[in-house]
Image 1 (cartoon, rainbow, N blue to C red):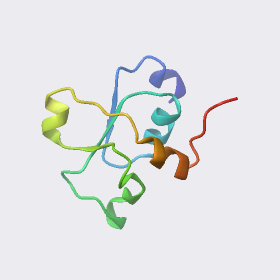
Image 2 (image 1 turned 120 degrees about the vertical axis):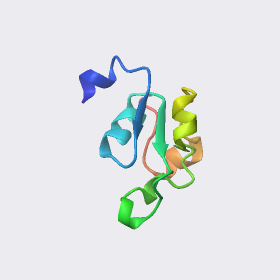
Image 3 (image 1 turned 135 degrees about the vertical axis):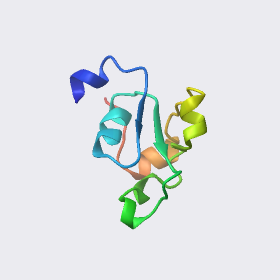
Image 4 (image 1 turned 180 degrees about the vertical axis):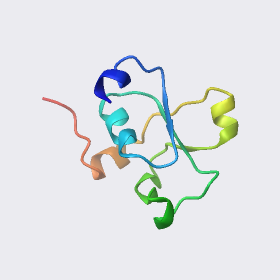
Length: 80
């Protein structure tokens, strides 16, 4: 996944650990909320991340960057 994300202009998912890899590699991201956000979708971690969007966002090519505060709470720290 690392090699594919290295060349990605953006990444879209409903729920995926690959989204975490995209965040770590600073790839703009879109976590689709159209299908629900909850335990059954295994995507609760993305609440308040700033990454939730819709199929309309995808159609418009709107990819997002994660919220800084969310990143800190979820252990995405700057490299030293």
